[in-house]
Image (cartoon, rainbow, N blue to C red; front, side, top):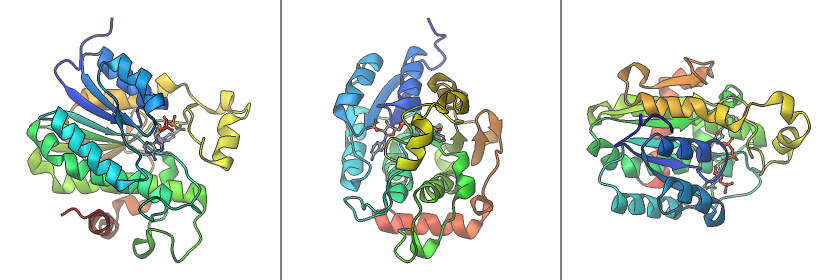
Amino acid sequence: MSEQTMAGRTVLVTGASDGIGAETARELAARGATVHVTGRSADKLRPVAEAVGTEPLVADFSRLDDVRRLADEVGERVGSLDVLMNNAGGTFAPSHRTADGHEPNFQVNHLAPFLLTHLLRPRLAAAGSSPVVNTASIGNLMGKIVLDDLDYEHRRAIEFLAYGTGKLMNIAFTRGIAQRWADDGIVSVAVHPGPVGSSFGRDSWLVGLLYRSPLKRFATISVPDGAAPLIALAERGPDPEVNGRYFSRFQVDGRENRQAHDQAVIDGLWERSAALVGVA
Ligand SMILES: NC(=O)c1ccc[n+]([C@@H]2O[C@H](COP(=O)([O-])OP(=O)(O)OC[C@H]3O[C@@H](n4cnc5c(N)ncnc54)[C@H](OP(=O)(O)O)[C@@H]3O)[C@@H](O)[C@H]2O)c1
């Protein structure tokens, strides 16, 4: 039996229906946490929810109303939230639009977790001190945030670059939280899990090609290995030492896009995202 390092802590894991999110949820529950799990597919989420012993919370991040309903449901279930794992994400064809009319890599990877985190802020603050762990990616190095064109209305979006931009936004958001919500005891950290042989890339022709080819065996690490840095950060708790920082697996201050340090980008992304989803 695992050591009960998470006993007494309440955690929400997004993207818990598959990959490193499912693994993280199961492992944190095994270590004693009360784990709530959310994903877009009820069928895929059910076995994970059964394993952790809570009811599944179904929400599709390409619908912001789903995210609002999810926050309400979490609020009804828990008085306080000790850890929020913003892990849902992936690469999506930029030619599609979400139900809210946004470019999907932007909405699913950034805008939806931005909204969810804002709506859950009172629950995080109620815990006294709590970490928000954002699953970012080394792909942030390929990203480019254009504040006046977040939805790619005035330039062509290339799928993997749009994904990388979403992951760069995860780091900028992490920094924004650290700068704004410290008085609530909320600590925010971003992490690249490594190249994980999960279902990652299932929605992408190009990424799927690599992740499903025979190369996968040589180019990727296992799902438990990929989840390990997330689990370590959840266990570490609200350590002010790591507030606003980006880990490449277990290594603090991983390689970042220079925009991740650009205060105008951090502030501009925060303000524009808040306006788009209607939060203060
Ligand atoms: N695998 C890698 O090499 C790698 C590297 C760096 C960063 N990451 C990041 O790690 C995180 C987890 O990825 P993974 O490797 O575990 O991949 P995965 O197996 O594809 O898991 C992704 C999770 O996100 C969920 N998700 C996708 N679109 C969603 C939507 N519209 N609404 C709600 N949930 C949605 C998926 O739900 P379904 O089960 O319904 O699809 C699944 O639970 C992602 O943020 C990814 O960007 C992965």
